[in-house]
Image (cartoon, helix red, strand yellow):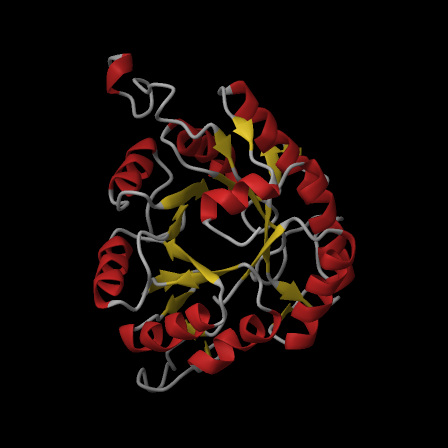
Length: 306
């Protein structure tokens, strides 16, 4: 293969962002949790890891919550505790709170029309209630309908027509999460319909089974689906985290890392905490010729209040 044919190899300095935002996804929602002595669980630990990640260079913190025993939590009180603890010590970092939980369907073995064990389906009001109360600057908006993490994620257009306007009315910016190629078409239709404001803020999740693969070709394809002016972050999960971070930077995107996506710095080397992952992302950005965006710079990139 000629070097010029490799995605990103023929880039100019104008291709890359001069300032690259780092999002740290602190804990995620998968259970059981990864075997890690310092995995984030209680609200106090999640907040402490978030503050350390911000000090290391993360300008956005992506927040899920858990009970101290590691089980995922969807209670407003848990979200509030994490947000309050972070805001008490850092009012600059941008908070990006999930609205993903509540779209998982597990069909019953006896009757596939009925929910089976593990089903977690919320109303739109339930999925977004913590966002309406806490009003973070950003919240994720999963739009995929696909087999995902052992279940079936269902995000029907009727749900989007309810969720997105409530998020907009709260003054919160949605980050459109895309897991597979059809999501880009869905997002385009939602913008055309006026359900979402364009050009939008996007993230591409690469490396989930049955979703977009964690390859340079898939990253380039995803980037090419973006409307002009869109802000996007491409990231891979597990061992694909930093290879895909490099691809995202080279193609003009931003970076996400954190324990939700990976606990590994590289093969055989586990990250002691979220801050270590952010430090490595910041070093990668520097080595590729860009600079890490501050929270203030990220607010300008995203069009958020200062």
